[in-house]
Image 1: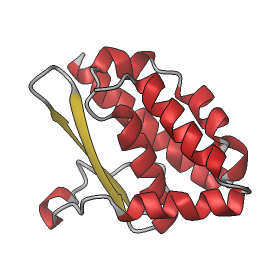
Image 2 (image 1 turned 135 degrees about the horizontal axis):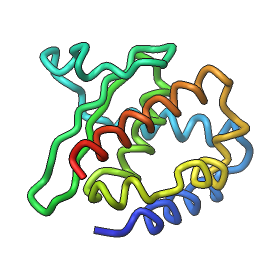
Image 3 (image 1 turned 90 degrees about the horizontal axis):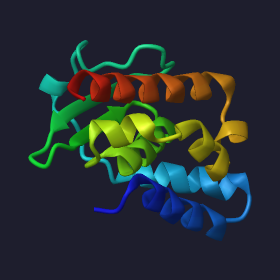
Length: 139
């Protein structure tokens, strides 16, 4: 598996192929369409992410090599896309890798920081905090 920085580099390359933020926004929504749906049993308060304007659920599962696998869903299309980006960056990596990764710089590099509304940015920060909390609990 590629390290997180390599995954980020791939995402940056994909985003660079797109023109303005409107095209990138559509691409983020497209990324969200590929997320596997969570079951009704996984859409619980335990998996719900607090601090998001829309409904967001994240499921964290350990994998055999010491990494963590993440799955998520939302009732908002753009948020599903943001989840897809987070899952692509974080899934399969160890808690130490997750905690060491500079996600703020990653968002700036992808152009997400200035393009999202403050409400979406706060929700994204809540999702990252949840992933980091789960990684910290394991690591």
